[in-house]
Image 1 (cartoon, helix red, strand yellow):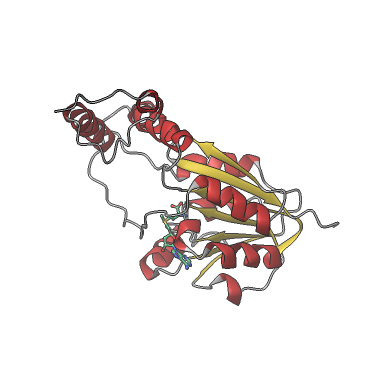
Image 2 (image 1 turned 90 degrees about the vertical axis):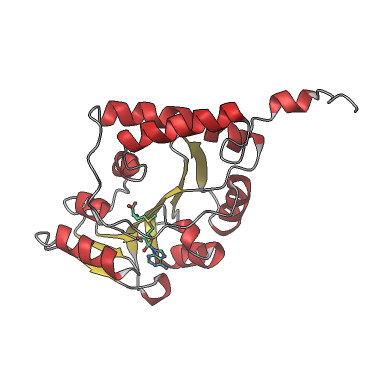
Length: 238
Ligand SMILES: C[S@@+](CC[C@H](N)C(=O)[O-])C[C@H]1O[C@@H](n2cnc3c(N)ncnc32)[C@H](O)[C@@H]1O
């Protein structure tokens, strides 16, 4: 049998830790899974601070697409004159409506982007864009965003390139450490209804190209926590 040749590229391309069947990787993965289960935290809510630090100057109307359980629309309520959360899932809308019941300037609806009339000063999507048709959605954002308004995305992309995989591996290691810092005590069982999820299919490099084509000047960055962020400010004169 021919001996396996070592290739330089083998040492440069990090392994896909989700797919690997190497026994050491499998053991490390199950250890990380156990730690993550004991110290769970929301990767999505983790980015709310980033959103709140990047709000546009004008704060009339904000729209959170796919608002899920409504944590972000509640956080935006005292920063905008009116906040709308949309979600096509009835359970999510019920939870979000209940959560924001005391906030008179918040509404929760089932509207799709093409049913909405702008302009909005802020449109956010947290872990939602990969549920939607990318090009149609970006075109709707152009239509709906006010001059000077801002589109903020916290998104997911599959790890495809070497750079993606390095970020993925780093996130996998950082994940339980962040969980332990955020929730030092092991968690009790989760009670909140789980929202609909979907695996992302468009890699980060392709997202950058398609954002650049539809929303010139947009900035995308890979982040820890298995996420990327995207920012586009509608530069039309106010
Ligand atoms: C992974 S969850 C994220 C929820 C929330 N943004 C958060 O950060 O917790 C994705 C959400 O997008 C919603 N969603 C998926 N497709 C949608 C659509 N076409 N219109 C509105 N909401 C949608 C799902 O119902 C789900 O609540």
